[in-house]
Length: 389
Image 1 (cartoon, rainbow, N blue to C red):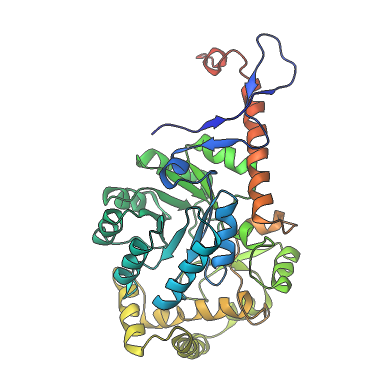
Image 2 (tube, helix red, strand yellow; image 1 turned 90 degrees about the vertical axis):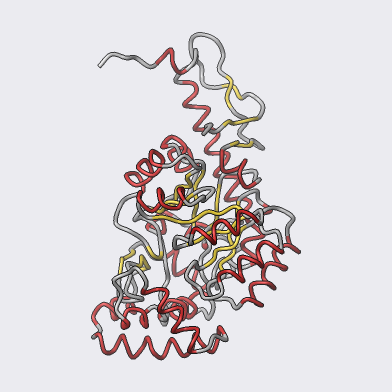
């Protein structure tokens, strides 16, 4: 796999002895990586498919800014997804993606929709079946599953995935325990497809660090949630800006989930199993009403969730908490009544830029850092690397 190439006009660096150093242009530069070439975007920056957050408005804003926006579809019916795709395509002609649930009962129908609508990318939070990957690829869709372990990356790469998104424990929502700085190089070394780094990224410094590890780009969730283009209510955004502490809890849906630490989350941690189960049943009924799914479909999806996992039926029912508790905050604007998925980067975010300003800033800062690093090796990097120990 070839590495990144920065194109643009030369920029003079700080004074050094020897020949002048050429660096990338800070404004208007293009960073060419295996990710940008694979999906046809200008910048190697991905907005993740956050439920109730990554709608047409945010996705199209990211796409128009040169990044890869991912539409979240897990909480949508198939007709709602079709309408959302149409809205994105009306807002932008740039490539974008759709996040699918690999274990959904209608996953094949959704894949067919992406193929018909010529959506560029299908992303997955769980590993899709080999057959589903083949179906999408045959239809011209780029397949990018998310993984949290090296072995999962090796599996989906062997099944034909075009790239993988690897999230370290710093990331928000469902997450693992291994830090990005440890997980990312493991995955980069294990597969020969582009790797996208997620978990703890928010600026140009992180982009350059990810590239140094061998990644082809970065993905961000919390940082894009906290933009002016995000449809999350302003009151909720300011709650994020005022918070600095996250916690990983299993009390939302039975799986590790990084969220903002609020009074509600602390209450869930203290509540009894019977109380959580009762809440989950109520939320399952609410989600059924919103999604239009039948009880049979909910049970079928529950069986799919249990397959290959050590989940009790109580934990499967608890999974109904996730869409409804997220909706209470992200859509209804009641952070006191819902949970707010968040990466640890929330502690260092203090503004709400547009997606264009955010991505332009990341690329400008990244270009400046690359230019500075180039100055350290003015005669060619190899001339300055010693073999002495």
